[in-house]
Image (cartoon, rainbow, N blue to C red):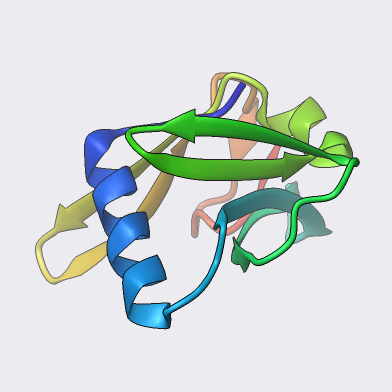
Amino acid sequence: MITATLAAADKIKQQLTSRGKGLGLRVGVKPSGCNGFRYVLEFADVITSEDNEYEEHGIKIIADKKSLVYLDGTKLDYVKKGLNEGFEFINENEKNRCGCGESFNV
């Protein structure tokens, strides 16, 4: 299961409204970086039989079954730190994260 904080759900709703279409947010992982994987976010316009779908605070979070192996139990948050803001993954499965924060391993 993947969950989202209220702050993340509000930001996703805002972005979907601004975009004018979309069923929810697709969350996944791709091989990359010095630690093995990176998180991937994109709008979901289609949900397939290979996807798992979760609803949190009125938004849908979609993850394909291959990514869910690495993401199960993850919480998606939206944070503002000084001049920076963005989505943050709270993933208890992470063993290490690279120094720049771009990649992780499990």
